Amino acid sequence: VIETVRWKDGRVAILDQRRLPDERRVLACESVEEVAEAIETLAVRGAPAIGIAAAYGVALAARLAGGEPRPFQSRAIREASERLGATRPTAVNLGWALSRMRRAHDALGESDPATVERVLLEEADRILEEDLEASRRMAEAGSVLVPDGARVLTHCNTGGLATGGLGTALSLVTRAHATGRKVSVLVDETRPLLQGSRLTAWELTEAGVPHRVLVDAAAAWAIARGLVDLVVIGADRVARNGDTANKVGSYGVALAARAHAIPFYVVAPASSFDPSLASGSAIPIEERSGREVTRVGERRVAPEGATAFNPAFDVTPGELVAAFVTEAGIFRPPYDFTAERLAGGGGP
Ligand code: MRU
Figure (cartoon, rainbow, N blue to C red):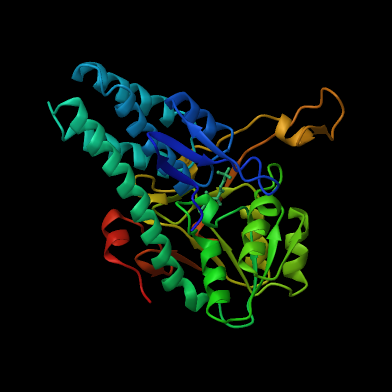
């Protein structure tokens, strides 16, 4: 288990992913603003991990205002929730975690500030625990999709780093490896921020899973050449019809997978689904600074003054997804992800 986000000594401890793989450093966030900036700058990233960080951010607000009269504490909690909710728009886990914290807070009514502090921390701990449990179940349910000898392609990072510590799509692969299956992975580099080469390759190295990094533009050709048996990715937000927002580049991989008749699987916990949206067209897509494109790290790779288009996500139509794996099992098309269906369970 990778300790991506934890509560330590009254602070929110965040493993700083901007420094990986070179340096393993933990940010001890002492204010809500520090947590918000950690999310915005991708010190913590990946849909489930963002939700967990935001939940602890709210618990931190309750604690920092624990010595104040109740109305002040309530206001601090509301303001924290608004600030954290405005950090990144696409991953629905963020709003999902914040609304859980809001419900927990609302249920407390006139309770004293110390109780509010305790209960909100317990709720954030529960969100983390449930995420770890969801990861275990997804790895178990999805293991049939990764047979012995499988050559897998993945995009972005969906391992322990993207979650409470165990991962979504990547956990299918690491589990298959751990149970003795021979598997190998082609890791999309994932420009501009290199979550694939920096983070996924690091996790696979630690787990001892054979892998090769490729530039994103090589993925379609790798599939066309018959080097890939299946694709697994995660999700930032899945609409009711299965349209899936995930790291930009996922859609292109899905098109190539369909063109060459290999399965494209999405692995994500129920907290990444948004049944309130009928389709993906209503999913807000984050656009980030063009500097992420015109530079690699600090080094400029475009002419001075060049402008860039930098959507952080794209939407893959549900019809390109062969199956979804959630903690409730495997879902096959046609997709209609209502809250009841997600809770009720998929198939084996
Ligand atoms: O911008 P990021 O790094 O937060 O984007 C992350 C992704 O797109 C992941 O694939 C997604 O959150 C699923 S993580 C289990």
